[in-house]
Structure formats: structure tokens, C-alpha cells
Image (tube, rainbow, N blue to C red; front, side):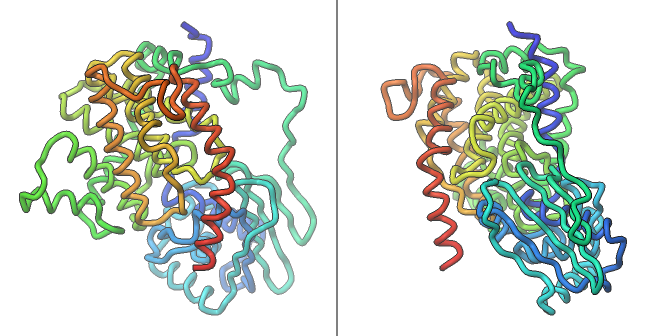
Length: 434
């Protein structure tokens, strides 16, 4: 047992599982705008232009998603609301204080064509540079590589801040702390989640609190495509039966409905995505409630889910053509299988089965229909968990699935980081030109 990795596991979960209000790609643009305005120390009336440059992947994920509290989609409204009312200290909750008056002001700025958005010619997969101009001054903030990582700040054309480059002589211990998965495998994650002191991992319970609240909101409001509410209505009509599978689908989808539909409630994200956080949380919560699990079981299952999801995602580019809800749900299947009495071999079989089932589901940007992909991934998770408990699953003789789960995860990541990069280019081309 590699319990020497446990402190690093805790650090990475605390870093990658954080509250986020709204889709994290447009929110990163709003954050950059808010920081730029703060540097200028101006009121919104002083703004003459906001110019936004983003990577192709960020453009894809920001074109069609509703910005919380606005009822509007796109990066223009994200930049405008961030500039008008963004809290530059609030990270991924930058828009938490947004009011209807702020939204009206932002909309007026867009109507006056003060906001422009275009694709930057950069190699960074995640990149946003927001420049706010007044009659006499300007400030530019560049966020890159992660949704809150400030790469550079320029004031009146002069660079006043630049992030320290990575130390090329970084020690092996430092590298392991920033990415503990270099020397880890699925067994290590299982050992940590099921045996670490409860006090050390209790913080993950906030994922339940935030994402369950979003799920309730999604069932009560008219958000997005109402995927979760549609399941609920058809149970009441008698067209669907209530039960574990239906509950997993409807409650997971409802949380995504609310998030992608602009609800003013934060999601607990995973690996920089609220939908991935929902996918790693809600199926586990539903199973825990179904079997009447105690608090410790829920916490350990959530930690297993979220850390396994981060482990799988760590092998992939931050944004890609592969739908992140699928990989997050592979974390959920670990937590679900364990709650239902499964061991590490059955958890590994369940993850293998999911990769054999839904590998290759494309990400065509953040939008309301993400709730359908979230529910599809959750459905694959419950199916794979139940099969694994019966000793059934996709084997290493089939497709990209290997004989051990860690190799299968690497095969999936090779697909995402390799040939699917061309898929990503094609997706964006279709989205921009349709």
C-alpha cells in the first residue's frame, strides 16, 4: 500500500474539486475581464471596448452555454458581465453577485458592439486573453492551461505580471506532488479512498451538498432541455418505472440541466468542469441513498469516485473532443460498485466495461444537451456496475480494452490525445460554419 501518496492525493482533490458557478470556460473569460477591470480601477461607464481572444477549444465550449443569471449564451456576455460585476477574488464563482441590473448593462454593451471575441493562434488548449480598454488606458489578463491560472497581466501595453515558468530542475518529489498519478494506479486510489482517515477526506461531502442542491433545482425549475424533469414526468405518467436506474438518470441529468441552463447555484466541479463534478457525484449519491449507506460510506464512495475521475482525466488533455462526462462517470462507477459491495477487481471490470461501451462520445461544446450526455454516461455506469457484480464485463480481448484497467485507461487517453485532436478541429469547423 502506497500511503506515502495519500497527502498528495488530498492536495490534488482539493485543487481539482472546487465550487464553480456556471460553465468553467466562459467563467474563465469572465474572471479575466473582472481582473482587468480591477487593475484599471474603473466603472463600467468608462469601458470603450472589451476584446477577447480564446483558444479553439475554449471557443467550442463557450459558444452555446448559458451564462448564469443572464439567460444568454456565449463568451460575449461572459466577458461583459465579468467586466461589469465580476468579483475578481472569487475564482470560478466570479459571477456570484450578478444582478438583473448588471445583466442589463452588459447586454447594452454587447448591443453597442463593445465586445469582440475571436480565436487566438495559440498552442494552449485552454487559453483566454481579455483586454479592457478605456479612452486612455488598457489592461489585458491572460488565463491559460487551467481555468484560474493567470499567465500574464499587461497594463497600458507593459507586462506587469508574468507567471513563473516551470522549474526544469524540479525534483521528483515536487513532480509527484503536482501529479501524484505518475507513480500511482487504480489500486492505490482504491486503497486511499477506502482506508484513509475519515477526517482527512470528510471535505468531499461538500460535493454532495452542492450538486444535490443543483439536482433539486433542475427538477423544480425550467432549465435547459429538462432531461431530468422529463424522466420525472414520465414516471408520473406511468411510462417509466421508478427505481435505481431511473433515479440515477433523472437526478444526475437534472443537476446538469440546472447548471447548463444558467441556474445561480454553484456546482462542485472535477478537473475544471462542473458537469464532470456532477457526473462523479450524483450517481454515487443516488446509490448511497438507495442502499441507505451511512455518512462514512457516502464520503468514501465520493472520494473514490472523484479521485478516480481525476486519475483517468490526468492522462488526457485538459479539453478535447472526448466528452468529459464519460470519464467522470468512470469515477462514479468505482464509487457505485464499491457501495454495492464490489471489490477492486469488480471496480476495474466496471471501468473497463464503460470504456468498451461509451469511449469516443464526442464533446461538441458546452450547452443544454450536455445533460443528455451526462445521463447517458450515468446509465452506462449503473449498467457496468451491475454487470461487474455478476462477474461480467468487457474483456481485454475486445477493442481498446486491455486486460488491466490502468492499461485500458491509457488506451482511452491515447485515443483522446491522438486521433481525436483532428476530430476536435472538425467539430469546431462545423460549429462555426453551420
